[in-house]
Structure formats: structure tokens, C-alpha cells
Image (cartoon, rainbow, N blue to C red):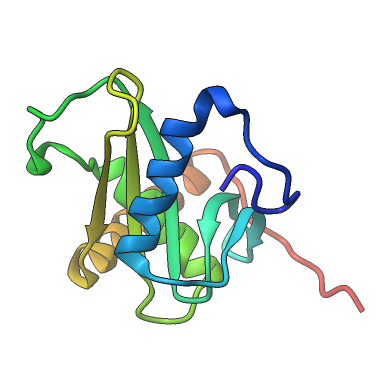
Length: 149
């Protein structure tokens, strides 16, 4: 994925990390027309840069030291969910899929994918929008977007 936009090969020193991450994403989601490092601004007053997305899927990569003993239930935090829900809400079709891809920094090639359910995504978006509104009121911020012709 790092070379997605440039079509340049990745550093061979990172091959075990990158190739196995690529394989895990492909095996989980199948062939997709991916966009990487896509920036956006939403009219509600938030924006970001999405690691990997298609019209129906949004993915955020996370790296940390973990091994095979970490249980699947130990992956995924509310903050990860809220980020994906907000990003998918901004750039994807309704009923999009959202996943965090966890790449181990301590075990080369170990990758875990946490795909969030539709119910979790809806809850994550509600949490995010509530916090966004709180932040905007607290900071007296009102987004003002103008149409550009």
C-alpha cells in the first residue's frame, strides 16, 4: 500500500511487514479499487487523511508491539471506531465497511484485522458527532464553507 499511488516498490527491508499486510487485506476484502492517503474536509467542520479506502470500505492502519497471544477481543478501541466512522461518513457510500488493520512491530508479518459491525459503526459515528459538537461549542467554532464554482 505505501507504493499504491507511486507504483514504486517498497523498501525490501520492510517486505515481510508490507507483503503480509497486503495479503491480509486482499484476503479479507478481495480485489478493490483502493485510494491511499486520501485527504478530505467535511462540511460539519472536520477532516482527515484516510490510510486506505474504496467507495465502500475505509481502513486505518495501526502499528504496535504484539504477538500471537493477544486475543482478537483486545483489538479495537472507541477512538479507532470513531475515527473510521467519521471518515467513512465523509467519503464512502452508505452502509460502508470499516476496519482497523493492526500490524505487529515485534513479530514481522503478524497482522490482525478488526472489522467493525454496522451497529458499531453507527454507534461510533454518534459518539464522534457528539464529541465534535462538544468541541465546537467549547471552542466557539462554527464551520463556514462556501461553494466554490
